[in-house]
Length: 154
Length: 167
Image 1: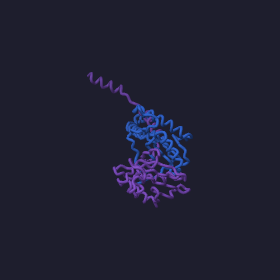
Image 2 (image 1 turned 90 degrees about the vertical axis):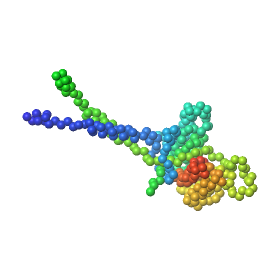
Image 3 (image 1 turned 180 degrees about the vertical axis):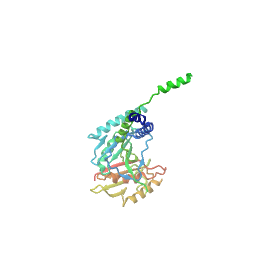
């Protein structure tokens, strides 16, 4: 008798709505995931200034992200690059190859189409930062973006 | 009659998907995305064109001292020179435009904006002479002032150069 009752009263929950909701959540997380954030060293404390504008490259520019900590170390994807000059030279060569794809007559020493994004700690002395800037300029980089935290309004 | 038979066959062969396994997998994917989610910080940037430092240039066709009636030391220059030095802690302790000392950041902002708005002076870039000890945060305040200056064409100033001073 009891077996009959239990088989009759078996409840099967409708899993379709919960599955729909979980798929929507997965879609949200897949859309907001940013692989660019791996290039950002989040330990750095950026300076706070008023005229910092939101990033807008309109998807046209190639970016070279350089993190410079308070001791002047160049940190790329979490790894400290000991030979700054060599690393930037290699990146400049890659950028030149990219420039040659769109403009065949591009040669070493020409302005590179890459924007150098400098993320430096607010305590970095200028002499250590300038070392990085000068090497970039020597290798043909002209467009720079200095990262900062926008001053809160209101 | 044949219609009834078809309906019966359909009811007997009804397929029920086991959604539990699919839900397990979906939850595992969701857990992965939640655990690896790291919202990127809100950041802004100051866009600059940094040509290599070069000497303060006279405007085209003019030689320094050629105009004997000119009493304005800045006339004929296309680059405005700002000097910034710091104390041992890296904080700015002196500011100057050319050779003229400037008391504070507020005055520097006013003077820079006035100079760049004046089309007769013809400035189009800034050379910032920076003491080697100046901290990046302090330097960014000066860069902030410069990049807020408007050229006579209405564009914001973006051409800057840095020269390191040995102090």
